[in-house]
Length: 221
Image (tube, rainbow, N blue to C red; front, side):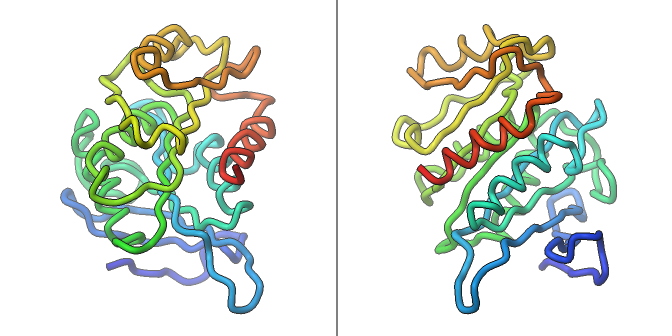
């Protein structure tokens, strides 16, 4: 059950939440779109952050950019800290426990019947790929966004062929953390398109507005 804390953050549309997970509490933030009276959000997007052992948190700028894109398109965006990050409990678990964390958040914010989107950046994209595999085809996932997918460092699972028209994969041409070639090697057997940002590096410095526009375009397609 999520617990809402009052008066958190400057943006009054942002709520600080705590969810229960297999390793204990999971710290999260939820951003809701401003909607006309009586209107409802398109669904809930759950967004995963980069590597916990290298400073990755739910406040990462790429993760925040993804959240803003979803909110702009009428989705509620939930970003959370993996186990061992911030107030989230438990030790780092090489992606296995982190995938369980993501699935726990999904279960609590977007149960069956609620339209669901999943997104992740870097290590978070690797975790998201496994969350997609665990959920599909038991429930539909409306949109999937993978940015800076850590294909050179982890075993990113292939995406279900039936999901591919719902997927956006974005990578920087000059990414020296995860070489573009590694993502192409992962995508090629799936015939999965990859959107390449010319001159972009791993954290998309100076190109976050472009990244946001690419995600918005995908969500509105």
